[in-house]
Length: 172
Image 1 (cartoon, rainbow, N blue to C red):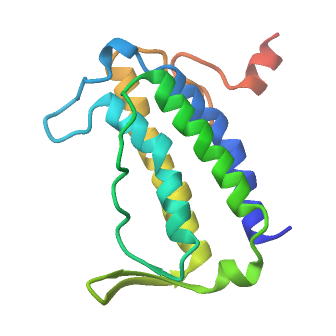
Image 2: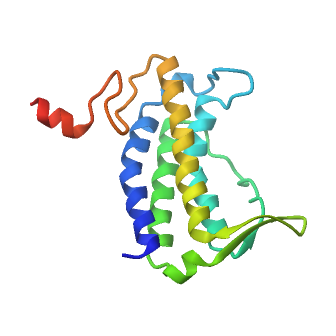
């Protein structure tokens, strides 16, 4: 199994819990923020859904900088957030499925105004930004859901609201 295939396997597994969190976004609360400096619920959901698009574009280049913001932002609805997430998952499948270990181990650079800010093997960038970055924001989203009194899905184990599927089956 290649490095990219292992990353894709993790993406597929984690996408289930991430989608469950996004499905629970209360439409009427998408503008809600827990604090002034925080993203709104809708902005956080869209960031989680849209991040893979830009990250994959960056991953495919040997040297890159900050991506340009999308020219057009879709209307902030749960349906659009889920559609963006699903499209990102498809893009991840299509992009990662054929990448070689040599490509994933090659050096990747993040540059601003000609200065290298980060240099690392491409696989590390993929783990740090494509995977860990999304998990970090999904954790934030689970706190937002709890503060809004929305049932928090099981992610790795039981939440106060839900057992993971393997325990649901065992409970009968």
